[in-house]
Length: 348
Image (cartoon, rainbow, N blue to C red; front, side, top):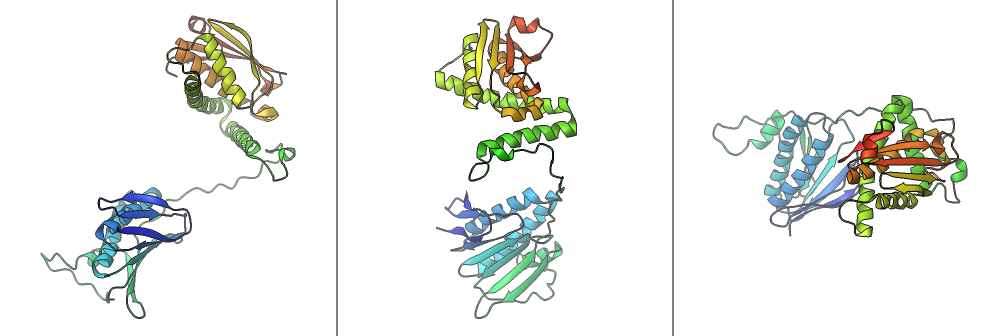
């Protein structure tokens, strides 16, 4: 079976594409690193699969997509020549540690001298490849190996997309995670993730203001809440509209799973009132009150999808200094007739 296998990877590797005859191409990328492949046996199918992997990678990171088409032609020519003339395995490497990526192809076939490549004769179907590679502005050289074989090196006509660097100062006031959260082996996953979410919210609020931050948090809550509702339906084998009691049970289930301590204060067909003794974000939520919009969005979306409309009132919040949270969710007609709170409609 023809294959392209990574010889040495500076990053990770996993199976890639499969061609019609069973050829494989594996990839193992590390930004700015060098990766090597072995084509053994070196077949056109294996070369084609590897070309696809290489051009896909270049396309993801190139400044100009048009440049990738030219680079793809260079890759095709160098791989194609090696497969046609090598008579054995072919080794390929790509290195993008410089401004432009360098493709190197080693094989055991006879070497040749580039010299001044003449313009191919009109009507000729051979001799055009390397000449065309040169016309694309590719820096190209050929080095004969001791004994047998050669190395063909081409600098591909692609520039990497410029990425903005960020080097902000460390937050010195109340940074997270707090040092007393660390265990014998350092900070645990829960402390890290809680700090990540809270610091993201704090940074967004400082940069863009409370309203923009709440809007972003609400979007996250809408998506996450939808998945939590689906999990509840699967666990309870529920199909169709959730009753008010089922909506409340769903709320308690999802909040308990993430460390909240919600409980039902009152429950009617058109109103759910919940209390909460413990925020899933802990006391750190006081540093990012906009995260309360997550609860509103999750609760409101679930209620609206099942009752047509919903309003969520955050009556009391630990995040702003209240001893507990109190959340009121109005359903259906009660929601439509209430001008306050956060409004949600069916389909949200």
